[in-house]
Image (cartoon, rainbow, N blue to C red; front, side, top):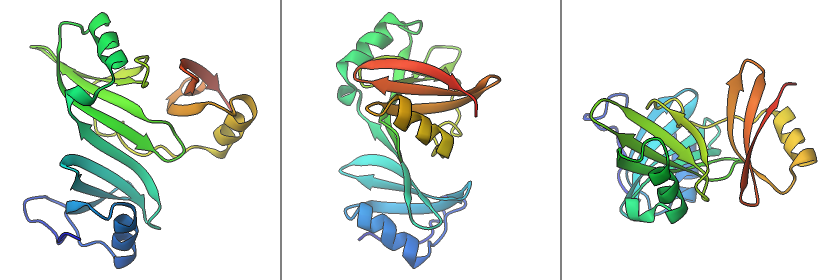
Length: 190
């Protein structure tokens, strides 16, 4: 277990309660260089695992909510790179790549791309289908609490599918659903 005392170089760094620290190391026993903060009712832990930078979110009860992992461009699935090269930002440069894993949801890949004037974040399925495109903001890369009504809806109408994203729209909740290799967007209101 690595030392994870508050770091003066990281504003907001804290010393976590033992129950939270124990829950984290039960999930990530090989984690190194952990730096702890609190944000939006989550403990947020920046750490290194297998030489990759990670950020994990745990609830105040120590329940795992999300993991964001920085990956090498070589680790991005070929289907995603092909989709990027065929997309609107084909002449942009990919500066960072991540995986996002959220509790109760399927894995999403994120590419940050830039040109001489702006940056954009592109979120893809494993199969290269674009889920969303947004201006860079950390608020998107946070845990998503799945409403019970959405869980019930998925169990009834998409029992074999993975929920990848939930966005609030004026018409209700837009769900990004991956069934086999096909991405669908469904708007529901409860």
